[in-house]
Length: 260
Image (cartoon, rainbow, N blue to C red; front, side):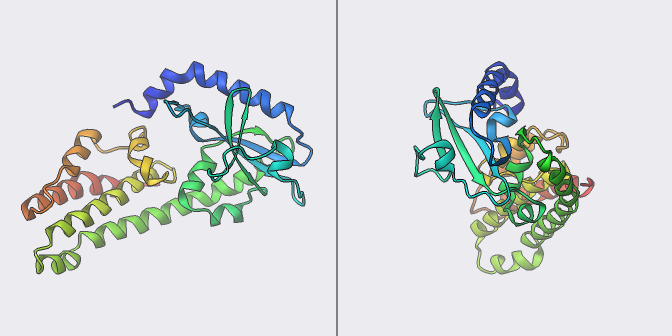
C-alpha cells in the first residue's frame, strides 16, 4: 500500500508548485475584508494525488468581524453548486473554498471532529494581523484536554462493546454476526484512539485507517495486525473470540499504555 508518507515524498515537487500557484492566486484577490486564509486538505498535508477525476485545492477563507462580503462577491459564481463549498477554477486549478466567519475558540469547540482535524492540519497563507495565530494558541490549549476526553470516551465505548454484559444478549440468540459487527465498531473506535494518543483529532471515517499508518505511535506490525483483526468468519463464535483476543491484547492494551 502506498501510505501517506510515500505519497508526500513522491508528490513533493508537484505539491510545492501547486502551493506556489495558490499563493499567487491569493495575492491577486481583494483581501480588504478578509482576516485570514488557510490552506487545508490534501495540498496542506502534501498527499494531494489527483486521478482521473482531478482534485481541488482546499482553502478556508475567514471574513473580518462585521464584514458582509460573500464568496460570490469576492470569487465570482460557484461553479460546482452540488459540492458543499464555493468552488471556482482559476488558471486551470480548482479551488474548494470554505468561506466563513473568523474561527474563534468557541467556534472551534462546536465543530465535529473531522472539521477540527481539517482546521488544525491547515497552513496559514494570510494572517497579517496575526489574529488567527493568537486564536490558535488558545485553541491548542483546549485541544489537549479535549483529546484526552475523546480518548477516555472511546476507550469506555470499546470496553462496553466487548463486555460480557453486551455479549451475553447475543450469545443467547446465537447472533454471532452481530457480535462481529460490534467488534468492528470497537475497532473503528480503536483507530480514533490512535489519533488521540498521537495528539490529533481523528479524520473522517472513510480515511482514518489510511491516515493512521503515518502516525508515530502505533502497535507493533500495525498493518499485519490489522489484517488479522479484520479478517473474519462473520457467523463463527470461535473466530469472534480469536479477533477479540487479538484486538484486546495487541491493540487496546497498547492504547491504554500511552498518554495524550
